[in-house]
Length: 185
Image (cartoon, rainbow, N blue to C red):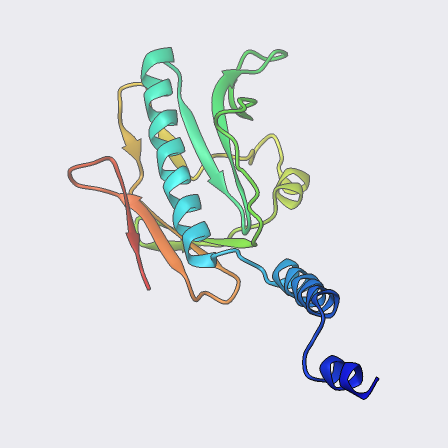
């Protein structure tokens, strides 16, 4: 009997090893689920690239549809506009464009926008606040216009960053390409 007791204390049984491995696997799984794998820099870069491509798409759409389009920015979003006729008066006014392709896509991180138009910083407000403050004499207008003749005006620079401003990308009018993007940090 003493021989059997000595053997048992000399090592671990297979079941004991399997229980330890299972506990380690469960703990690792819990830790992995709590780790946030989002890469803020990549998300900002991809969102800036998407915004750039949407602006080019809006410019192309303005040319092909022979309509005037535009984009207006807010602290954390943007929307595209189209110049259309008012149903009541027949006057031309800017209306939010309801096109799924040309829409802001919310990311899993908060993105902030800063806009300079021809070198002048623009104070951005939330869309709801702007709609409430808009009047017939001072309606909402886009910051950047995409004209049916292919022009994009005025010169602009849009800086997209995370809340801490650790990752920033700028979208601006270009000399060779109509819209360019550059990493700022």
